[in-house]
Image (cartoon, rainbow, N blue to C red; front, top):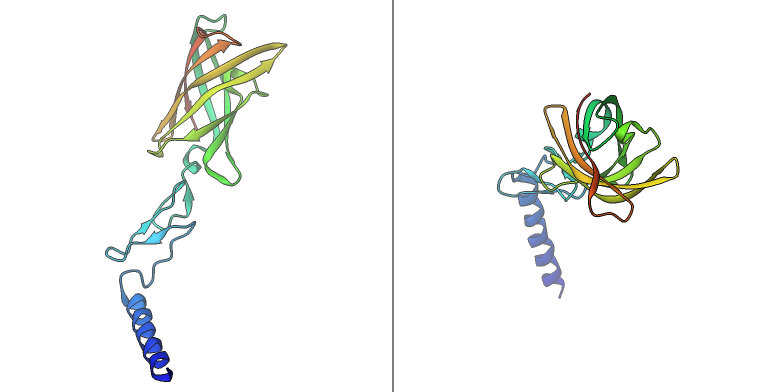
Amino acid sequence: MKNFAVLMLLVSGLFLIEGCSGPCKDVSCLNGGTCDGETGDCQCASGYEGADCGTAINAKFVGTWNVTEACVNSDTLNQSYQLIVAPISGYPDSLTLTGIWNFPNYTIRAKVGLDGLSIGFSRQEMSFVDAFESVNGQISMDNATLNITYNWYALGSSTPTRVCQLVGNK
């Protein structure tokens, strides 16, 4: 029995030595990422990216965006304002967008797509001046430019009352 314990200790030691000398020897993957034993590259858990998986996929969207917006079927056809995009604590793939349609008290929740470059938001009830509306749409980002197209619905309606497109820059 004693010899078996010594043999197991030696075998375990060999595995530890091998693990310390392979391509993952000096690699530290964060946020639940794992090191690929063949390449030494981190394979990131869902919601994270980067060489060491240290960046939440929502980070590239976060900031204050100066936007111009044009809407169809609206009394406000063109406007400029700031849209604030913020991370949701504990959710690396989720965001809030505050100020959409130039209403600083509007905040909607959005989720980053699997590609890490787009986000989507489903219909959400909004309120201002006793009117209730819902919005949905897609957002994508390319080289610090934000493009959003969204439909705005009157509560209970399936036909958009406004179709809006905005372009933002940080």
